[in-house]
Image (tube, rainbow, N blue to C red; front, top):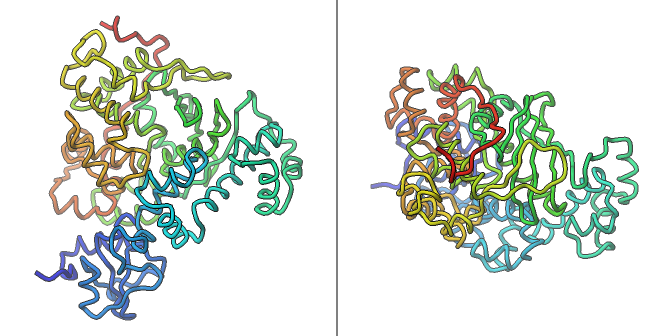
Length: 511
């Protein structure tokens, strides 16, 4: 059988062309794009101008494209083999490395730690990032430190020596030199320009603005988070959403303004137990917002479906909510298996009240507790109904998942590919495809996950008169996660946000 997919049906062709239009690197290696007018073949993520439909053919391998007479693009290097540094120039490995750098891994573990998480040598990692971003891991981490330093200079009254330490600089001199080089001014002048702005109410409190691509359905995202909110761990007030989260250096509270009143940005208040966690907190908040989605491309693709088109027009820029704490999300998903949303929320609240840590941060918060750590969950007795009030099979799955997270067997930090993490999740006792795919979508950012057995999806499809055939679902590729969100919106619209429970019951005394 020929490796060309040029003659595949129209739906598959359109799905691939959409991925090329969106320059989505998550499809690199899945197929290759050949352009007849230039005689060149590329990866889907190639930064070159998107070719016209009638000039494009798709191939399943670089070898097939070469055999058809096309030569490799010199910009995206599609002929590199998977696993090699040249391949990883445009693979998701570079993106995973950058996400870990943004999360502060270089400051905490150094370049050797970053390389080890990704499974590369330091030299290979440097080549990968330099080819993709024009800078190595140290330079990228330095840029991240400069951004964190500016936020701390302008948003706090910390001494510059403390700012330098919090941002990750090795010395005050290095901090001063970097700020001068990056911003062409001194730290003192940056702070002087920021004078007159509102000062933080408590130590460690920062006000930042997170950039998002427009259109952005902020209030729809708020409603989704509100109906899933767990008392004690999360709080909803007006158009705000607040969550307690454990970061690398200590606890934090993230509060987002999802009123949509500031186009292109989302106001965010961060209350940090340790200001070194500024960059990880901001990065995780961006993931929660799905801030890097290209909504114009996604909406245009889904609008081709006659059933999804009105849903898309009604909610331009609908996002797939991410997670501030992927490990907590994994545990919550296990608790939500085969039960209603309300039951899952109640079970999670009991778990948080019984085994979560009290939040020890100054300030007025609507949240009171942190989610239990994986080490705590791994140490629970799944056979004791007084410890975990749930079916024994689910308790075993929860404790087993806690052990896998504690031991690093299921890495949710972005160091492994979606496919690898999904396979490891499925290898865990009591975790099936629904749980693995839900986490791929919300915790790992997979744009093309779908849950055909989900009760909400089935109810929405029935209400819309939509038959979920394989062909129909395939036509939504490569953005089935966003199609799923539109189906869920049909059901979620009828769900009022739950009122907070002022006094959740401990698990041992719950009726």
